[in-house]
Length: 332
Image (cartoon, rainbow, N blue to C red; front, side):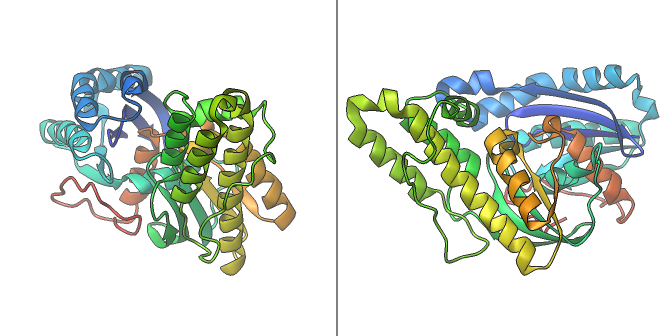
């Protein structure tokens, strides 16, 4: 039985898994505290993790009806993420491991997102396949050759997709986080009203959203007092540009590597327009699309526990590890 901890950004999360089955998953979100700042404040995030982590551990144990002495191991995210936030989770995990004399498994946060596809999976992943990982802080295409054998094909040169949503929302005078509010007002807009750029067309696997963000900003300035009535159209057009870029590059990667399965994971997949576009294009191309359950798309500890479950089947637990804020998807 694995107790897993995730504190890489602004969610304090703990889960318990037994033989790859989620027994409990508890998440304490910090969004409403960061909202007034328009983004995550690292120092505030760290302090809130420290305040919440012990209670969340106990809540997860209670939800699973499990006691500490029933645990076999502890898993924890050790990177990438905010250094102070990661340290809180690692300190809690190592303290538990030492007091219970149980192994502590360091898990790459990016691997967690990939292994979220194994939670309640209706269509298990078949290697090799292509993974598009799109979250608040990451946008990348990865070739999954086998378990923990991942090759980074390309990533964003600037803002991650989620960051682009947040920054565009700020330009439009909308609240944080940007993704949900842009999706909501875009429902009333015409996605063809504005033809925003699709950047990095010359590169099949890399992304750039800074030009798109600038184009939206310049349009909003030029609209002046008309911006308020145009917001739904701007939001819909921006969302369409992001969706087109992500879907096109992911499908192209599948074709180039001759694979028939695409995994799309990360918090941005909570966007219904994006999810619908992926389903439609994969159906046309005959590609099997795998998307984690919505509750496991955003940061959570169940995905860390699932990655640890597969990790233990293949590797020895290291004697020591340290917080690694800048960690590649190709690193264990």
